[in-house]
Image 1 (tube, rainbow, N blue to C red):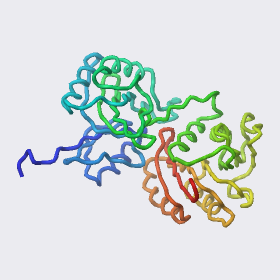
Image 2: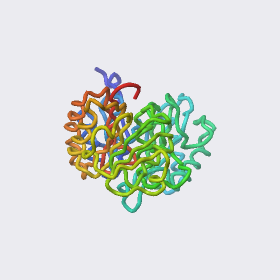
Image 3: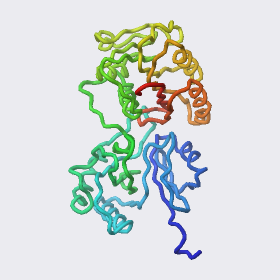
Length: 356
């Protein structure tokens, strides 16, 4: 075979939670991806042939890498971006969206860090948009939610002076959000950050929660996730020995059962369609408790959103075993992801029956 007949290599740039890089590398290695560059929260990899972009539990975003630039001057960075675009495909049509974000600078929750579009990324995105929108973009502003099928130009700020460029096509929700982080602006300050975790999990799962449905949350205190469920119009039962925030406890569609989930008679769950679980109990015990509830003949759950605490990323080796346990409940489907708002934990979205 001539050299020109060899398939073109693939380059992928991946963002993940700060600390999850090794879990990402281990997941993509069996597919033939080799590490090219790595920093906390960011990994690039190369494959010797043209490949579909990798996916996995700990991959928050992934794009086809088209270049990078390291310079203190934003104008020089943008010039390199334009050169990379022209080299990648001179005849390419404009992109539907521009997403610009910084990799996680710390573990989520450490020093109160939360992922999202920070001030630097916001300023850089405006500068890039102003410089390239006429030729390369057909959106009215940067960092909009992309529609399914949209072509997205990605710029990751590994450092303020070190940018990586890539492209991807939007499909599922996490690929549509800038940096894989759900943009959400609550009407009032949530009770806790569990609000954001629940909002992301509900949207990512695709579960068809409807106003008036009954949802149960095990490990509900102080009420962040319950706040999101109530905001969506659901009736909510919160199960937790600890006290709930008064804003949740006094809501007319909320009932607090001050107990542990495994201690309750099954009749307490009668009529519930949805279950959220986010307690500090060890994963194996959490799955025993949930399994005893959902496999009971009185159970009528449509979908479960179960957060399992890893403790450290070495525990990711147990995820397959946990999945096998959940499969014993005979669900319709299981999706597993470290959500952008998760700390060192993963979310299982389990569709049980009916129109989940």
